[in-house]
Image 1 (spheres, rainbow over the protein chains, first blue to last red):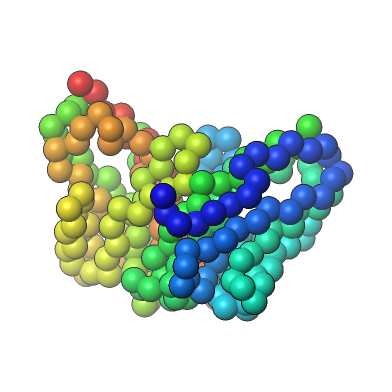
Image 2: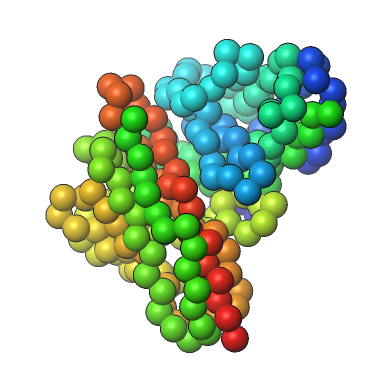
Length: 116
Length: 112
């Protein structure tokens, strides 16, 4: 158990809909990261927040947005959903924001999103 | 766009040493290289991290050459439970904005 929690575990919805995925980081961690993993594919970095501020951005679609709240939990919002958005969405957290040991990421169990 | 490249798959037998290499030609100057293990439908699990030369922990070693454009994860004496996908992760400044890039993943199969 990494200490990172994600809800819900599974989500089934229809095209065109909007969903919100939630992540609670490990106690004491200030950074939160979001990744997308499509079926049998690698991990695609979406976005990173550090202490409430956006720190780095990957290839995140304009239909997707995220935020980190004062209590450090984060939400990933996916709107106008398409079939191709079906994937596992992982959240990770780290103590700091850099690329060193304080940036070591610990991953949650993921949310499996199915768009029908 | 910078890439990180890994072999798609590797086969090994129990008790053997396995070496998986990742090339990352545009790694950010101050970033460490991190390796993760992933089982099906689970989140990646941290294995080891390093900046240069060699790092060893209780499960693996990581070799990083002076130019830091590649790294090699070494798993000593693998067992069946090491069958998984292994990813390298680096920070990249290739297109002037910082991004985190996972390698494409190496699917390791350990046979009895």
